[in-house]
Image (cartoon, rainbow, N blue to C red; front, top):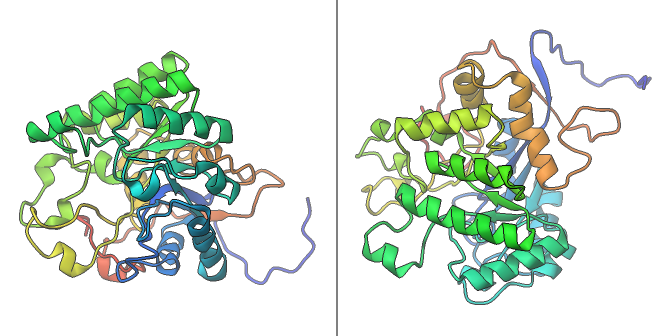
Length: 361
């Protein structure tokens, strides 16, 4: 279609990649309850700075986003203050306590495109199965964080949410429940060799599973960790070279569908302490695109088109955003221009996010 209006600004994109706006399925905006760490406004601005035009916020706010009024608060605030599209996931259980299901139907009716227990797993398998049934009926994905937060045996073994085995055990359980219920299961921040194999086998058997990988998990290994710098503390933690290579191949072979950030801002005071006492998490909205391009595209694992698929097209499909994820005629005009020749040093002081907690730069 020919556009006859005079452009207010002309951008010379010669030599650049013009992609549909990036979509992040996994961010923490800390709003409400911890706005000293991030707000909808600052998080959305950080997303725009990193090339993201749509983000999905996790429900571990204070109070937990577990009802339609909290969903409405997030969406209304985003519409009023955010320069991009901010969507809000609803919690699976009330207060994320794992005891009683949240009102999933009403949150979906309010516009929530997904449910998640965020940094926890619903350890009651029957309750988790019931949530998946409801999600399947509502047509929204269940975004699972495979950490065994309440498993007594695992806790006694000292594993908790850290070891490869824990992530893989919960992933297998959730895949089995998805197979039984017909729900769309989306595995968040996969970090192990085993998780790639689990997703591979699930897809082979026709189970509706998608999976994401974070840039820090395909860029750094456990050998890169500076034990004196809590900016290297994240959950799941950095893994071995074998795990990193498996994640890269999984993305290359379209076993792993999405690159997401798990953007988790914390204050300097939170992180400027011991590795033991510091909270988990790093920021990622403003580094994801450059890390993906440098590590995976220049590294020969992904083409630029596959990068667009993992960071825009596939996320849009997972959330049923029919007008996003493509530059085809009739789609939303969410666009990002990436200059592959630009070089710069990551400097957290230049981040728009309130959080500067990153092991990069």
